[in-house]
Image (cartoon, rainbow, N blue to C red):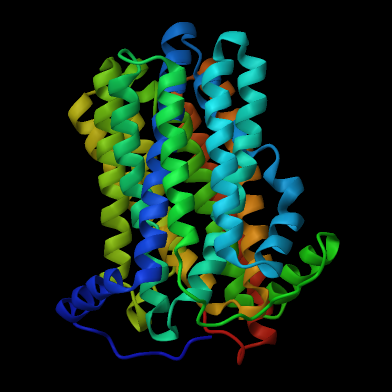
Length: 421
């Protein structure tokens, strides 16, 4: 575990955060994620809006996101092996080239039926799963130890800005361009990202090369790293919780809330995407500036409870301004919780196990989000969005109780290994 540091004044924190963008490796990874995420949301939101307006089905609209998580769980051992065996920049570039080709195929397959589209989206999700897992390995290997904590808090801001840009473009261009044309723009963003990864400088540290083969040994390596570190295990659970419940619900609600419940049409979808992405960037910056070192030791359960309350309140309100304002608070709370526990997992995880723990985390996040998205989409079609939000909040409460019970005994047995989460 990293040693405690004295609190840093906000002005100094802002200066140090800005200095990261002078680091070539951080800047290249940041722009790669900005481009590829913008392309992803451009295609997925355009496709989701097309399906929702054509069928009125929240299940179909959310399935566009959920189907991408079908394959990564089974492929997680392979992803962990790739991250530990090969240089991250080569793996990342290859995965984004594959994403570009699959994006093109999605656009041209739309006229052939939904089955072909969903199969291609599932394969595309596998390529993105490789990127999401291996870029964490790249971050840890390319950043100086003194910069790692702040970099772990900030490196996803480009993903959130990309989501805002891509969402705006997707909602704006869906009535102006064909899906093949939108898919072609998406593919170009992935090619740009691949070039950024190929330009990464030499790694600062190269731990964990070789690694176990893509078998169950990868799972054992991840479980072994978690088992002896109760604080890491607790934060790992909270990482899964906030991603599965809150991001999963966001994928269910992001189209039906503004278009269906609030009646705002495509303009409402664009507005919600801007508000959500702004709140996500603000949440990540909040953690980077105000929750570093000892000041970051806010218990995740408090963040989860506040976020769940905002989630339920946002869908209970039917007045558009109030609903969207509280939904923005919900997304801000989700991002603060997510960024806080993710950077704690990155910091506390041993270098030799980071590839395997990252692969396991990404696989479980995607699998659990898939469950939430499909169950939530189906539940929403039958009982409405508000009841679905209550069910998600209840699931978060039960999960928090389980984390508390499952890790309490571990803390008692190993007080010297970890501080509390």
